[in-house]
Image (cartoon, rainbow, N blue to C red; front, side, top):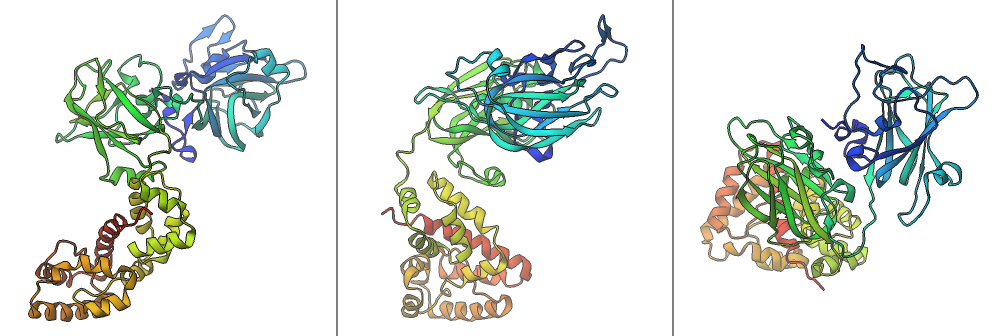
Length: 508
């Protein structure tokens, strides 16, 4: 099991950029007499055999230098598997109890891909930045530390004072790979910035295995869910390294022979920087590879039905099982071709954008959050963030928005006067009132008054497509609700209304 897939809570969602599973490599060290520097970047967790010795001493799973008898200290240079924005480190001293270094520090450096700098230059001439000042280390444990200087680095230098052993060095961060315009790559691969964000289950193996660059060595190197009881379906959501135009995907069941999924399908979504809970709950996914039967221990190459652009993909497996790797081939998407409504909303000044959004939802705080969230990358993102922000508001904000709606059945002349900016939309939404009898209208007015007296705000319902009789029935059904439940039911109706009105916004 790849230990690098389990960052500490402080660095949740980050990747171990130094891991050998990504191509991380120890380049040079001052001394590794007792245990090789190469162990520092191994993805697998360290182990210990109390009875194992070598001709040089105790067999240790880590990097260990000899005891210093002169002034100075030891160091090791790591080439990261992919250039990345480093957020934190873990100097793991597992099983180093009487021989761990008392102190350590960490430095970073960025070497451009075009540079011909060799290891000697890294050691002797290039200027490093100290990103973790000297810190005390505890023995036999994780020594996790946020960096003092956040930056993009290609190499890391670990200094230990004065000597000793370190089992693993984890460098937690976000990949920032260099890309050539127009060149097709595996956008899901962690080396391209891809990342597994969430999965229905990962009982047998971690979800980030799915996007590792190298082929899995065995079944434990993939993503595998437990057996469904009762049968259902599992899923995993991946963030692509950059929104891209996709061409083909490979869904590989290598090593999975009696436990591969029966069928699979792939969906796409274009919502960069979407909140994780919203990604799980949204119904805006588009199927881009239709459901098909898989085979054991085999790669399945499929052409996508809709190239996108997509920022995320979701793999659905039925009913459960294991997948070794998911490759998603494409090129980074250009900004051209944005929905005209997105272009207009992004370009509008704050006052104009607020006014447009207030026509959709009458909460000033909601409109302010939407304006601040610009620029949006897609119309899906506009809709998604509209709902996300709405559910972050207070009851008072919700009631403010409710107050921007006319009462159902209100006099059309009064409606146009009081709600001039949304009168046409409100009239359309209440079109079901047109054929209502006088008795139904009178009963709606009476029930509305009783509802407002009970809850403190007018009755809110997404009236589009509803007859007056249906509106009345819904109002009567909601009257017995408790106060705390009803305001959330009303808020959910406002979400539907906002979505309809957003789609009525002008693109110019």
